[in-house]
Amino acid sequence: MNLMNDAILTHVYMLFLFLAIMIFNLYCVLSIKDFIKLAKRLKFMTPLYHLSNAIVIYTGMIVSAYTHDISYTVILMIPVAIFLLVIEIKRYKKMRVIKSHDIALQKKFYIYAKKIYIIEISVLISMYIIAKIF
Image 1 (cartoon, helix red, strand yellow):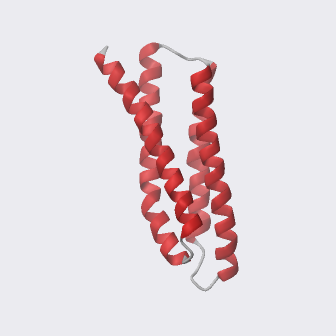
Image 2 (cartoon, rainbow, N blue to C red; image 1 turned 90 degrees about the vertical axis):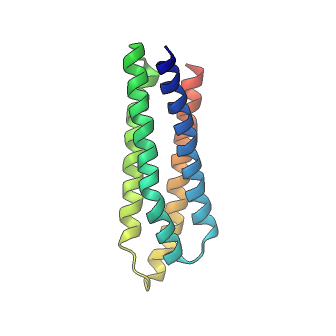
């Protein structure tokens, strides 16, 4: 049973790391005014974001399969994880095509990225609260 406790702890700690990465990315969007610097920082953070999401998904699958728990909460976690994956990919694709001389697109991206990260953080916190309640 010690292995199961380790998987649950890893799952929970990775959720907090995942949330911390989202908050750090939001902080970068809010504080870095140079778009090129922001793009480099977010480009560096994107693989960490996806790696932490993948670990959360993987450890969640292990815990769910081991405990034979397929509740509505677990079923809800699947589309939430996919949603977070897809929305981050869309944010990255939008950022990647903006050139250094496209000032209007850069300003629109800042607004878009703020919305994306606020949505991601609120979805993750909401899912965590739902999982704790049910």
